[in-house]
Amino acid sequence: MVLRCSECGTEVNYFAPYGNIVWWECGCGRSWQKGEEKKPPIGIMPRKFWDEQRVQDLTAAIGRYIEANRPVPSEWVEEYNELTKRLA
Image (cartoon, rainbow, N blue to C red; front, side, top):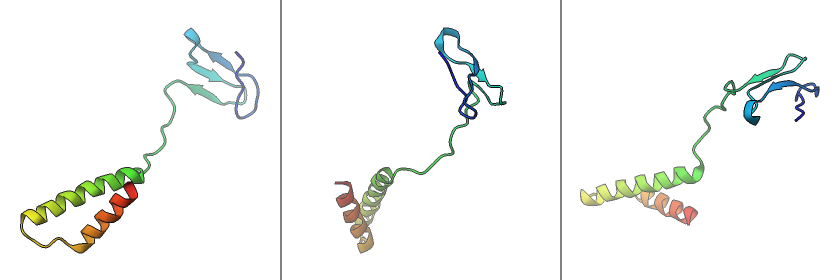
């Protein structure tokens, strides 16, 4: 198997016991060793999951207001309806 450096394109030296590459190095100074990969920073929760959680929160809050015999804010009901429509 021939590996080439993504920076300069030359063939690299590598060590691959049992077919799994453990490290490689190139004459241009680039190198890699298993375990030194940097994970990307944490992103954001996908909108669908956020919407689903918000529907659960609204459902619980509306239920608590009904149980306490209090008027449910119309904004909550509107938001609940919008989210359930979007998720359908």
